[in-house]
Length: 142
Image 1 (cartoon, rainbow, N blue to C red):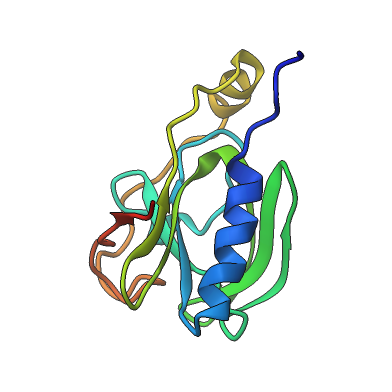
Image 2 (image 1 turned 180 degrees about the horizontal axis):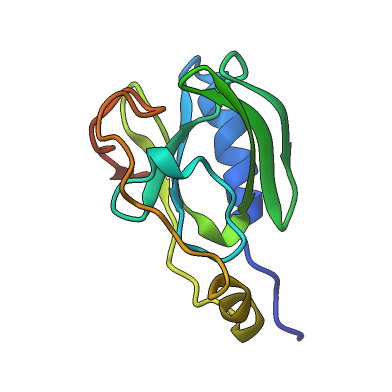
């Protein structure tokens, strides 16, 4: 039997739908330092960013086996976000923290080479981030 592909993109899409079906607000926790991750750097804290994926908060959401992409507004400015699936650390419902934390995956050598060319600015404002502030509280759903 050959090696199976990562289950992360499938779980991400399924949990996104599950959270919406339960009238909750899907948020993702992203490793903003992962190679090729394009997020508004002013909202990154400790190398991470929490993003609200509610349909009312974003436009043009696309999730496949490699990428999560969408358009969002931060501080009144439009941004196109492009997130490798491997950079998604967790998905959860804002209202109750139910969701899933994903295992960390090591970056591939070619991804690391690309990342060395991109400086990361983690000195953004600490207030009024896209999630409304505060660290997410995650619970493992079994």
